[in-house]
Length: 468
Ligand code: ASP
Image 1 (cartoon, rainbow, N blue to C red):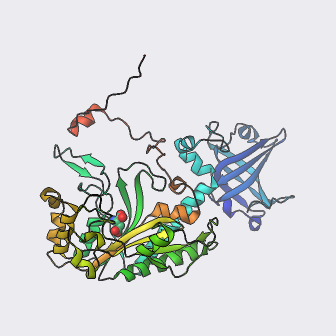
Image 2: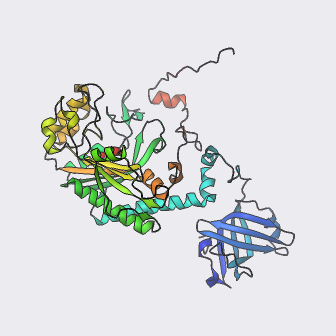
Image 3: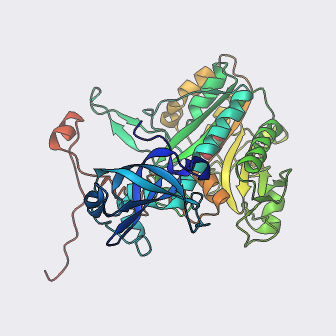
């Protein structure tokens, strides 16, 4: 290792000891007879001093802010302690200074910068913005907590394909041309919904995955454009309450463990029926905090008893409220016809937090006949039905009753942290126009790449301004 300690580890207990640290120059004060460097790494700050007669004084004079350096020196108690910093009581008297790499002048002023510039230099923003670093650390801790919790509950984490099949429902797919099969396309998964249900047919019983979900949607305020992560989860031999209880216990414990300063409005998450909720709050995402302005208050709520279908657009034309694999309530099965389907209630469950939908799921249809009925009511033609033949085939071979949910990781974190933007909880987010301004994506590709993928471009004509 190039260092013996991190900046966060250096304290008075190490007084008199020699340490080697590595990090970045957070601030720099060059005086005629002395140079002060505030050294920063992921764990903290340490003040380091080099005096004029030192062999490396001239090296230190070349330093710029954000240069990466290695510093050897002795830990000393400070005469005047700085109580703002964990290492405020000590400083390092440098014996060696090595510049690992110099930094150019920062391309922006952290106090006065547009979001696109922050995103263009995201690696710098992540390095110098302590709030972002904390958010990324919490993201790691949340995912680790989920993994450990579900592992104890005997869940298996299983990866499902990223190159899969386009299907005629949901959002628009991102499609990927196949070089090997000219004219055919894969689709990136909008969610692993079908795979996780097929894993239940496969007897895997309890599945989860921190799953990337890719949807070619227009940017929305509370969803990052193009891609987001879900805790995707499915269980066999369960009833709706089993799923709600599992997620509820896990989330409450997670908040208490990782965010002990947050106040939970309810320890037992209330279940609200969709109908009552709409009547009382005029929304299916009610904010149940006692004090709506308090970002430290967390009010989870379950919304249940949703209608199976959205209100009819045209007579007899239905679209699923959640998705087409959601199980209707048994008592309403008799209403599953063109005339009455609007009245059918389902086993959909949404998880709401402070007025945001942070997850949704359902008990699934496991009877091929009911599934076919739902396909018909959605208006699937024979071609559409073919897309799902593999599901109906699989369901012929002893499908267990099953259900699941998929809380959104990004959105959950955004609300837990009281952030206004999803971009504050994602290491490398797209901007509001769905662009990765750091990498410059999306971008044109070389002609040879298009040729190999058997693609000819037919681009929209650029509008020419009149009068020019
Ligand atoms: N796949 C669903 C979604 O992305 C969640 C679920 O039903 O488990 O909304």
